[in-house]
Image (cartoon, rainbow, N blue to C red; front, top):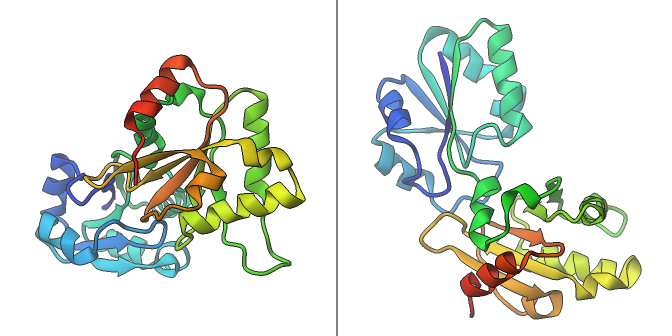
Length: 244
């Protein structure tokens, strides 16, 4: 049996039902490569009362250890946020089903719904994009910009997820660079930064890029590029934005 369990956004975000299941599991994998965690594996072990095995990308995506284990015993894979927000875990479920392994998914809070704390209405978000780290002058992926423009055309907000280890300041510097080389209007865009969403240390920042690049941010974090906001969205956002 394979259980795919969402941890939510903080170390105590796991559901009571999922905790009960973990008590019956023979092995627990902790997937640790899709996000910059706001807590450690040791802290999580104290909450769930059991030891976890760290599962890197190779274990989850390339090897078949998890599925093979689940053929013989009860196995859980713990995933930050909601377990099916990333295609990695959909693939794992498909492989398990091909091997005739029973599966069950436990959903939880994720950044996809936590961004509603900005006051922006979830149904007004368009396609989500990821910002990959720029590795060299010849490798500067800008596909996220195209997603933003497509969303702006239909007056939809854009949620931008950051590559592992990519700081907010560095991500914002990409926009500064593109403002000089691709689209000068970027300098006038509004940006929202959601830092440690869903935790006690959550902070929300809102402003132009020139103001935000001067601030220090913690991970995990995401960016939002809002389009035209309803007056209630803007009023709420102004009321919750953090100052530092």
